[in-house]
Amino acid sequence: MSSKRIPALVLLVFAAALAAPSLPAIQETPAQPQGQAPAKAPDKKAAEAAIPVQTLVSAPVFSFDPAGRRDPFKDLFAGKDVKEGKRVITGLADMEIADIVLMGIVKTPERYEAIVAFAEGFPLTLLEGQKLADGFVVSIDADKVVFRKTSEKGMPLAKPKDIIKEISPEEPAHD
Image 1 (cartoon, rainbow, N blue to C red):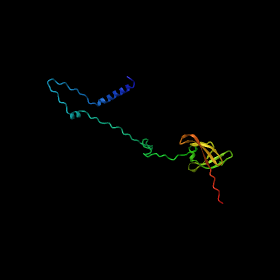
Image 2: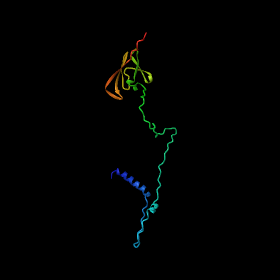
Image 3: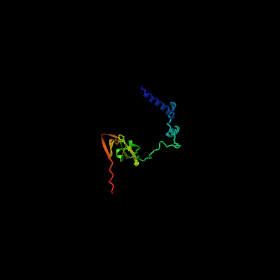
Image 4: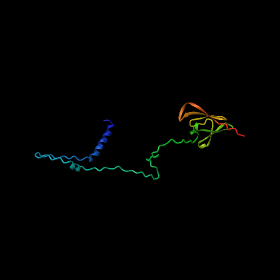
């Protein structure tokens, strides 16, 4: 006998032992003397009355006392569909090249720095080599910033693209 069959056999014997007290007892009928006719079988109603009716055991009822905590089984969204929300941008690593608005370029003694609009219009400084969500800054000149796009929606591009953002010259003042 295999070792996998032994637990199944033990379980079967255990289940039979549990079920045995609930089965009606088998009564032996005494042997009839030879001169008498066999007794009539008892009718069905009498037989049903002789078998004890088992009472059903109800399953225990559980309740959750939150005591200031959230019910872990309650639906957090209450059946509402979750819609794709607005992306949360917390820094340069979350910004995509398409989201960047070039506000200006500043020349320092060592290099050029680009001033870009961050989430909700807050300014942020970009330097050459800084990484973004979908690329990085290649170069910053007096009038333009060159970005290299290396991925699209999280998937790497087979051939990176260079994207140039220029500062548009202000309109000449009207005298």
